[in-house]
Length: 246
Image (tube, rainbow, N blue to C red; front, side, top):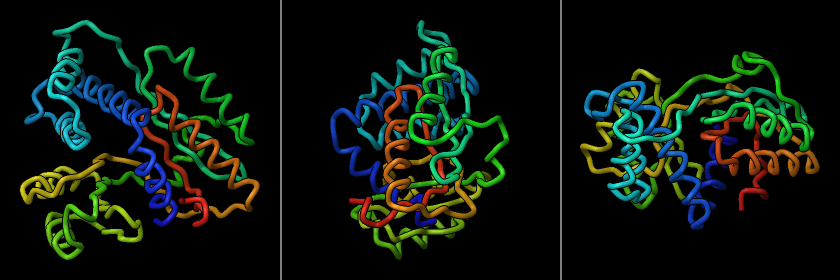
């Protein structure tokens, strides 16, 4: 899973910037609003909302922001109605991409995402065109200062996690089946192991290596997509070269 680890490293380091934190807040607020709309405003009975609230707290989001996002989802406060869309396509060199977005105007968002693909040597495909290359997994990022590898492995694996990745220099990455996601999240919380990211995502079965020119185009595309206001998550099977991680 090295490719995913490297892109997480890049995003994790970028996350220290204030501008990036604003983007993270926007993404989590949308997720909480949609989760509350679909499953109710009580995190105790809504696993998706509970995971979003946990991520919000991990990113030091103010309590008032969390409460307002939930109330917008339940209809107690007015706010935009978001539609969930997953875009699929290929980047330079045939790299498979899945882009998860939430938008209040798909007529605006869809052509913008398509333009990003085409501008960087890729193309947007039809639904199902690349999904078969990914497997849905639970994903947790834990700063290495938050727990020892042995402790995290003991807690996560006993709770049903599938794998613990340690290659990233700053964070441990825990992978679970979708079914085990909630029980692993509860185990980490019970053991006071804070996460900086907790989500269900799309993990590729295999990774694609590119030459230097196409790698630069691919990183540019990933960054453009990641910075788009409506994009929640970007998943790809691009094996980012080591020299591009720093």
